[in-house]
Structures are given as structure tokens and as C-alpha cells.
Amino acid sequence: NVLAGQETGSSVAFPNAFRGNVAVVTSSQAWGGELNMVSNWSNDGCRRIDLILGGRYLELQETLYIHHDSTILEQGIAGFEGAVLLAPSRLGINDGFETQNRFYGGQIGAQAQFQRGMFTIDVAGKVAFGWSRQVISITGSTTLFEGPGPVAVANGGLLAVPTNIGRHEDDVFAIVPELNVSVSYPIRENITARLGYTFLYWSDVVRP
Image 1 (tube, one colour):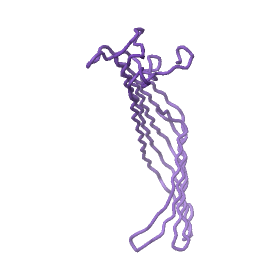
Image 2 (cartoon, helix red, strand yellow; image 1 turned 120 degrees about the horizontal axis):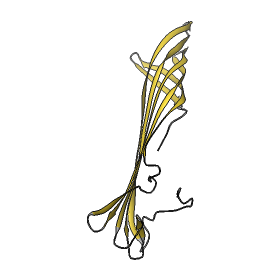
Image 3 (cartoon, one colour; image 1 turned 90 degrees about the vertical axis):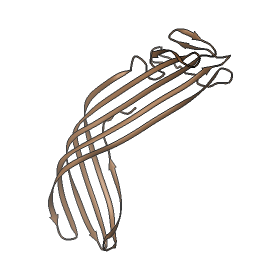
Image 4 (cartoon, helix red, strand yellow; image 1 turned 120 degrees about the vertical axis):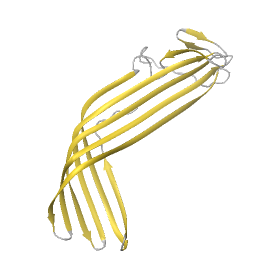
């Protein structure tokens, strides 16, 4: 508990005290695009090396939603905005965290292609420098139920409380290096098998 400076907890289910459940829903989506100019530096038939200069855009959106619902039983006790709650009151607590990162920057790099018999090896390395726009949205609420319908709603949940609820934005400098390695082999005249690996690093992002 950041207000009291002490550890605390929220009882969801416990024999003879609370009956309840917790649901956690999370999502993560990342995408981007790039526009490059490519200039050949060397080409001897078996080896080709190109230089890369361009721009890159990346976006990462993630969400984390936590809901727990708890009904007070005969030996349980809870609180709601300073009031003591006894059986059969029920509490629904919601916490929501949404983050968005957008990167805009220029990039430089190189790519090489090597021919080894029937195998073709492609290697590309790039690094982008630019700015990340970071947005954090935090919501939280606690609903008191007495019977079938809600009685009152309070601002703040368990992790999302009035001290951190809201929209927070920032702009930070970021670096995005990328490495691609792949090996291809022609199976037939119009069919090629390819196996590869891509490594992408984003130096500064916010996450839920």
C-alpha cells in the first residue's frame, strides 16, 4: 500500500469468509513499417553487399485488465469508502492499464547476400535513432452490490487508485537495432524454402 507504506492484500475467496473469483485479460500488439533507400556497395557474383538509409515507424499497444468479484460470507468483513461491510454484501473491483508506444526515427544499416552452392544466405543489420511517444492510461473502480443491483461506485480499484489513475504522456529518445539472418534453398524451379530469425530491440517502452 503506497499510501500507508505497508504490505496489504485483498481477500477474494477464503473458507467461510469470502466467495469470489478473479479474471485477468491481457493483450499485446506490435507492428511497424519502414521506407529505405538501398545502394549497392560491392557485388562479385557470389557476394553482394548493400548500404541502407531510411526511416522507421513502430507501434506497441498493450492492455491489462483485472476484475475480481467477492461476496462476503458470515465470517468475513470488508470496507467501502470508510464503511464496514458484512454478509451478504458483494464487491466488484476493476483495474485497467493501457499503454501505447510510437517510435519515429531514421535508420542506417547494411545487408549482404552470400551464395554457397544451392544455398543463399541473407544477413541484414539496421539501427534506428529517434523518439518514442509513450502514453499510459489507468482506470479503476470499486462497485458495492447489495442484492441484485449496484448501490454505489467508488473511484479506484486495488492497483489503480486515485494517486495513479489518469492519462500520462512522455517523449523519450530511443534506439531500435534489428538483425535478420536467413538461409534459403530452392526445392523446385518456382518453390524456395527459407529459414530465418529476426531480432528487434526497442530501448525504451512503457508496459502495463
